[in-house]
Amino acid sequence: MGKTRGARYLKRKRQPKQAEIADRHYLYEQSVQGVEHEAEFLADTYREIRGGEATLLREDFCGTTNAACEWVRADDRHRAICVDLDADVLAYGRDKHVAALSPEAQRRIALVNADVLTVETEPADILAAFNFSYFTFKTRERLREYFTAARRAIKDDGLFFLDIYGGSEAYQEMEEETVYDDFTYVWDQASYDPVTGDYQCHIHFRFADGSEMTQAFTYDWRLWSVPEVRELLAEAGFSSSTVYWEGTDEDGEGDGVFTPVERGEADEAFVSYIVAHP
Image (tube, rainbow, N blue to C red):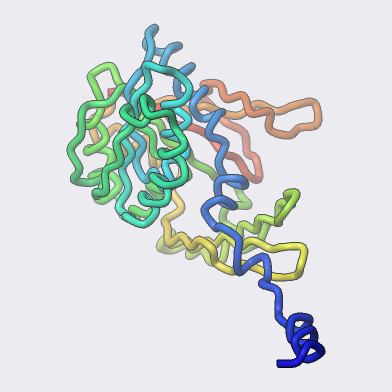
């Protein structure tokens, strides 16, 4: 190949689009998770309720282990058990997050590739099921089965933490965009069936070069309500549950501070925590 033809070839060579080379797990962590806040909320809430310190966290549907690693990193006494059915995402978490911990901290975290319905682990101070992952259980029987397993998985003075979202907008088929420095996060409520409660959502990522990572994540869920979840927790053997509602700032936006409430507000969209007591 001559010099001129070679230069033209290099000039014509297509550069990869951002969507082709981006790490979908990294994008998810940056746009969806707030692991420092979660670790603080777990520790502070346990302390307020139990009057002591939680040390052992079990995180169900742990994904990339990002939250559990933050828990371990936050305190030298903290240990974590990470449970997920997806071996590939656990491997990602091991390589990306666990490997970044100190050797001593790595010894305080265990990754378990198993089904949360049947896995048996050391009883935890805290069991957390975040990012609405338990919505994957579509019937009362299956969700009750999971909550019963969760009850067995915590100590007598342990706590079970769930997050949940709702509001009138949750039932609409719609897309919502959030713009970050390097990408745009798209939450796509693709379909909702009011008869069955079946709910399919996607996450897409869009980039400045015009490319898009379509359906980077897909969720086939049932959209559960707060009272339904609390009723099933009681049926599964939990003695009580408390809803933690987010406050608002002077502009009416969420302020990131969650406090226990007896009644909520008819917000168009909300995210709350439910804390269940054995």
